[in-house]
Length: 110
Length: 308
Image 1 (cartoon, rainbow over the protein chains, first blue to last red):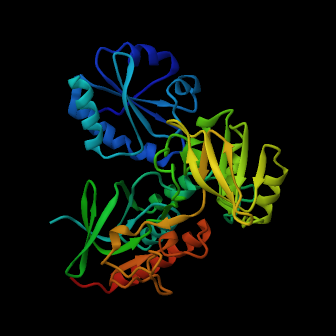
Image 2: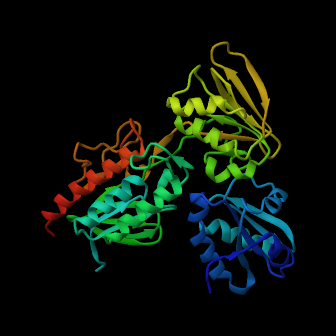
């Protein structure tokens, strides 16, 4: 059920992303970034498709620079796939749904 | 059969939102389709000081929100989607989005423009790895770093000033020996200690291992090249009209801008255009809004005489 993406904080990042048992797709965004807004419906659709097998969340990169800096994010939206607490893959920009599905499928298969 | 709108406006920047306001106030059943953020290029402008009515200036965000609220107040509908095609069906038009299709009597194209690229080596490879076309989007990610801004117009100089809020320092690289930006903006940049200028120069390559680490610049007068270290390059050299989807539907000029007459009519009956998508010369929020109002007035006249 897509109720909108889970909004992360520096505090919840470890628990919800790094310690998650299922893969997590995190969108790093800044507040005045049109493509960050544009990609949200796509990510919600991806969340709907995978249900319990994938968590889809977002993090405000401006307010959480400490977390952002760790992942070398220099362009938003940066959508990073975390598997077992590690960066498995990433896409930057408002890519089409197929790109995200392909990325998630590949990582989940490994 | 899908409901028939009186007018569908493709694009929600100042042109589209002004068109929506005028269309709705004239009693037209109007739908505005916006792909990302209402406000268009204004949505990613930090501060707008030259839009009449705001003596102390206004943030791009606030101006965008107000324009949207005003149009919706009079009944304009709005949806998030990207328009990908326009097809004539008898006297009506089908507007195809990535997600939905709609039918309408008249269309107003207000799809604006997207940032122009340098077209140099390393630019595509390092896009989003230090190369950016949007200062408000990516500026906060370069806290404490040294960056380059390429360009010499209002956008480049204003955004260079905006970026000094986050970054350690900015070098503005411009191919001439004077800026095109308006005097107020220039003076502010010259007084900003974090900004220095590299004149008569163009970027010929952007490089680094997996992220931007340097740019190669060439002096256009002497031909000399030199390498400069940096961690980011903001390319702010103007924009190109979003008209790819209109090929074969309406006449476009050699630069890709939609050709319109004084009443904002395109070459296709029932299709109007306004804003950066047709205006190469002025490209201001206020001129776009003016064009949007004009397009809506013309569309309204057209709809009044429309027959199935």
